[in-house]
Length: 211
Image 1 (cartoon, rainbow, N blue to C red):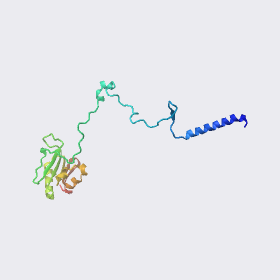
Image 2: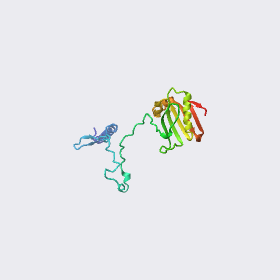
Image 3: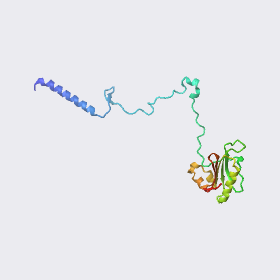
Image 4: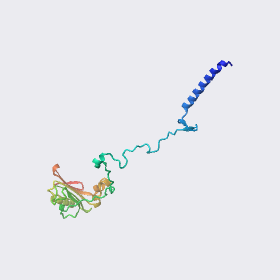
């Protein structure tokens, strides 16, 4: 072989080897590496840092508050934790009962609730409400007599709302328990007056009674 061609072949071979190494490096999925002190290859970890190590504190360390804490301490005080957790809603309603709102009638009944907008006053307020219970076997005429007695005794009320049930459980069951289904089944009479709206009615088991 002509000795003058040897340097040229060496140059071409070197270029080919270099291109081949570059192509292999581009296709390799391995992460980049760095040599350690002994010259060996050491892989660089690409994992996420441990949880929490990358979070910077948002508040100053305890005891190191800004100067405004001295002039406006109320804005830098921590809210005290509640002593007692909130209680669950009761399944039964405990109605208030005011003695000044007594009902007199010869029809047997029990008053579970009687209240108005002025509980601290000795005189009845203008808006009054009653919850009453009667025997499940009560007749319609007896229910009507009880409703009329109550309306006549509280005719001076501008707003009057009376609900009469034939079951104490139905009267006391909280509406959130069953959506008011039990109360609806045991509601046997209603008295409603609203002077502003011109309403003055009595209903016995859903039937409207003439005034």
